[in-house]
Length: 428
Image (cartoon, rainbow, N blue to C red; front, side, top):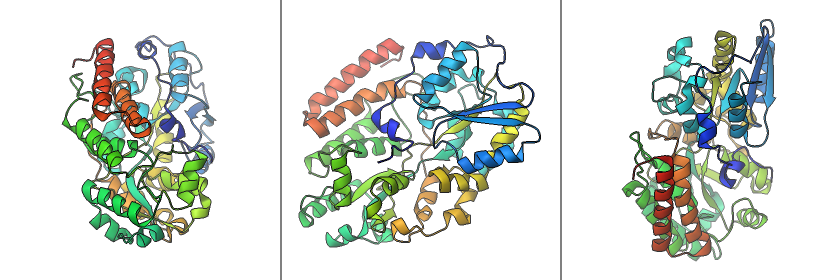
């Protein structure tokens, strides 16, 4: 299976040290980006449409020499190190959505896009996605690329065999609560021996947290990962394990992919980009899949931004590049090329997103993902969320994979979070 652009997210990113972020002090760097016609863009494989990048070079070739460089490995760490070293800093830099909160405290290292007229474009983008690129001081450092609305991906014939709703509209309506979703999983297991509704408990935990408007740290720098919104997600994940709805397999392994192919894992809660993972990972399941709404309300998983660094000598030109590359037409091309689901609602009606998808039985999947993207709850993402969310995710995984006692695991998670919070200066 080809490692998707989100594969490293599931595997765990090497965290950039808080000290390294702090090293990006304001007013300390002489611009080292473009000189004259040169304009350097950093991004990662699959982070932008290759077609759009190529077309941008052609469109603006008379005024700028765009050097688009794909950076491998731990992208965030390399960008932070380069910026701290004050040399060879790109003019335009991609910022992964899961890392965005880490950049916001250092907003002074980026150009405030509002000073370049970004507010003129605001109405064209999803409001919650737009707001994710804005720092606490009101400056805007990230211009939206894509988003990752989550839906319920399932195998039509397996659900039909299990006596479950199997048409997308019926699945959306009849499995619209977690209890109904779990009950369907129990029926699936009884009617299709050896089948599990989901691969692991984290699929429940992460998505329930992401459905809400709170995470692990609030705007006042208080740890809130011990409150009801996280505890409820934890309890639902534990319930999924207790009721036998999750497998003992690890996502992306040969055994897990074989189970998907054999119809033993016929269901997942996946972001829009997961449709491309299925096409690459289990191509022989073409035609079996459909997409429906996830229970309760949609969540978001993924989606990134473009920024202009302070090193850029031509910020106005860089902004013209960004706004053209990320307009509705080009975002639709990004979905075709790389599975980047547009943050521009105007894209959803364009032909590239209206074509029936043979892999999903001829369904127009954007009829599910598009409305879902417009219903995402606005949440505050703290720079400390990754550090303080990880112990909870690790412990719920231990419950699911190792059978650890849930009460012990919760207690251990909260103890770890308190120690990390004290180290980071977060009150609890």
